[in-house]
Image (cartoon, rainbow, N blue to C red; front, side, top):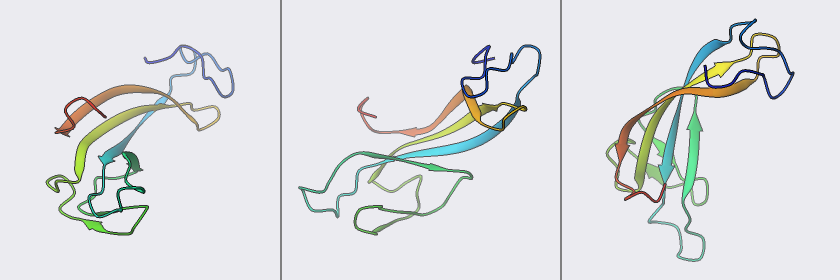
Length: 104
């Protein structure tokens, strides 16, 4: 278990076993944004996606897991508190892609 106490409601997670939920994060740096707007961003998604849109300029990045502007793709398994429903920890991380050179 990632945590022992839920940080949101204080319930003992050893006594009330949290459920697990999978989510995806995509680390992007859009090359089509202007240099003054360009920055690294982490986009969270509930499911694995085939296409992303830059939140700054709206440019499409597809396929998401192969596009040069998508530097990191990770599958996260969260622990979700059964008492309050909040994500209270990350149980595991699986890297699908990481070409960031350690910057993300």
